[in-house]
Length: 60
Image 1 (cartoon, one colour):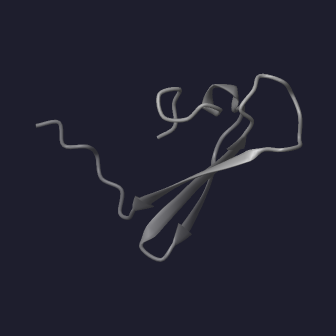
Image 2 (image 1 turned 30 degrees about the vertical axis):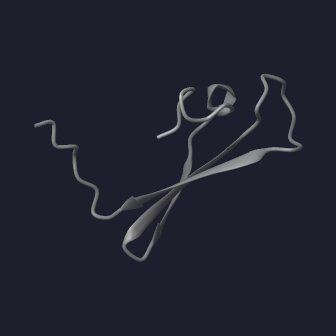
């Protein structure tokens, strides 16, 4: 969902996202910084909503 083409700070994110089911959707969120330095201040939150149930992408 997040990569260097759609999010400037995703190359610097370390670790796994958090997930939380909310009614018929799944919230996937991650925190990160827009720079390669290590700091716990001024972090951004990325959030994506996925419809449940999850299904594989139809490649046709």
